[in-house]
Amino acid sequence: MKLWSRVLKDVQVTAKASTIGPQSGEKETAAGNMVPIDIQNRILSNYVLATAESRAAALLSAAQGKSRSMLEKAAEEAKTIKQQAYEEGFARGYREGEQQAQGLKAEAEALLEEARREREEIIRSAEPEIINLALRLAERIVNHQLDLDPSSLLVMLKGIQLGDVQQEIVLRVHPDRLSYLKGKKDELCWLFPQANVRVEADPGIKQGFILDTRQGTVDARVGTQLEELELVLKEVLDRGE
Image (cartoon, rainbow, N blue to C red; front, side, top):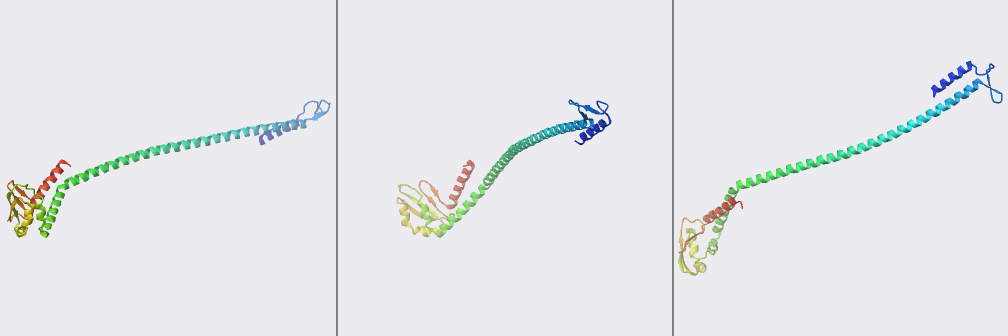
């Protein structure tokens, strides 16, 4: 606005230095009256200034409106871009996280499977030793039980089935058990009612007994029973049962 004011003032100064119309320096109106030139210039300058200011205000308002619209549009686009970036980043992060989780799961399953294989291998390699220890422990328990209670021999004899055929059988035991079994003739007769039982000492028998019959020999020594059990267990292990 200052520029327009300065221009118009220059116009007024120039106008004052010159005359328009009659030599008297006055203009004749429709009524025959003359309007001074300086008043005309002032009116003109005020009109031009008002018009310029109005035009400038309109241009400024339009520019401001357009600027606000552009700023609002830019802000909205920035918000949209930010939201899209967030959603894309979230989706990408979720996918990456899911992929990492799947990878960790697969790795954990692989480690678990490897641990299972190692466990099975350790057990498989230790099975013979475990069986041996178990059998030795069982032997000690049985021997201890027979030492404490010799009547356990009678319990073992109850499992022998000879049938109803009359025959003579020989029951061989450790010398330390001879006197005990000879004192149990009634029990032996009850166990083998159709047989004539003869008890003999055999130093080679530590625990258990050997029963000689007409059909064959029954080896019920503790050591022999444990050896047979060991063979059965190893056979089962070899089959992978």
